[in-house]
Image (cartoon, rainbow, N blue to C red; front, side, top):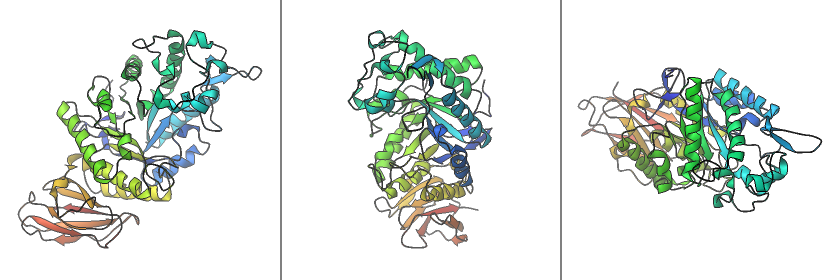
Length: 445
């Protein structure tokens, strides 16, 4: 089952992924979360690949205008039949699997999005008893109206599993829907599986579906990788322990909610989480499938989104993606420039041999710069808005000259390499201009 061509943790450093036998860093952005539902999906994927991207999110959601539903609807009665898969919905998804595989794009599926099962979206959802011919409210134990935010966990839809409500009626339809998904996705080696979108529900729900997917994959003779995305913005909170403390259930982690945090707190909490994974003895990849931060959103501005992208990768994460508008930069021109520049940097270094290394930065001011390094071999430093500091390169051989290359991130342009003479094992790094996003690559060769 251990097919090296399928996406899996990188053998040489399982903090990262490998795909088709080679290490890969996941970079992405997209106009929508349920990208398989958008009519211009081919253009979206081609645009992503053209700028060096290879990572998209795939919520199995149907709450936007024009979205197909996972079940067929009787036009005469207007009711869904939960025994009949939706041809258009599953056709779109199957095509999406094919399109991403052709382009070596990794897609991270989210089985259930809590926002589909409360408030206005619930009124149109096929699982709502008033919308299908398969059960009544009394039979299903599902109410027809939920006016509270999904975080209140009023919907019993998320309690059907044996360790909770043991609602075999509704669970059977849920299992059938997941089986339809897996029938189409398991043959492809470029899929990752996340159970929910930012849930704060009972961990038993998530664990059930992770184990269910693993069992179905085993029966199909393939390996898959699963995670859960918890709602708490502070990833040091106990809620997140349900993932990182249980490698037997989840083979990677997603800490997207950390992308609500600003500046140094964003970095520090990420490093805390990474240490927990390292100390657990079960090193696994860590993704963030959505980066918040756009001038149109509520969770940080555009600068926050751009900085978080660079802190995530230099901070040791395996993959990151700009969240859809209006909460994120999506696949905008700005997002594409950052993806392209990051890919340019990664093509010149082996980040899988590096570790986050802010302790090597001297005279660093608050949020000025962030570093990853393979000490003695290569160092990468990201500057949020120009900067002037010293980099400890004492692990390199003596005071031999080092090569310093500057990447002007918004322009996606390298400047000519220069030699730097260390003094007392330190190299001074001054950005070519006083402002702007810059990255420095310092190597011993």
